[in-house]
Amino acid sequence: MLTQDQVLDEFRAAGALLEGHFVLSSGLHSTRYLQCARVLMDARRAERLCATLAQKIDAAEFGEFDMVVSPAMGG
Figure 1: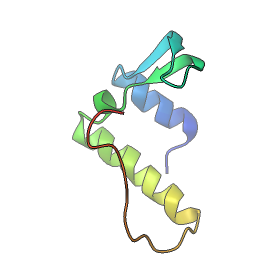
Figure 2: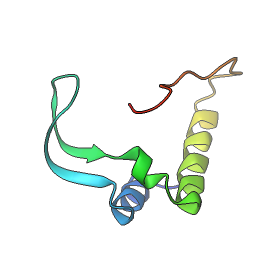
Figure 3: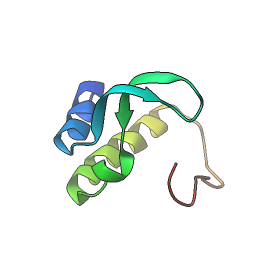
């Protein structure tokens, strides 16, 4: 499982971690913005990140899932 720093390194390596000043759609402000579509363009990188996410979900012991909901595209 990747550490938080390793996950951020994956985003940096893909040019998917932007740093500066961002106004989020919620109206909140952030100094960092993650471009998930960009980091997932590399299949090996996506595999590492998704494996880590799956391990974290499994460790949280949510139980069985009936469905997963997400936006059709974009965020």
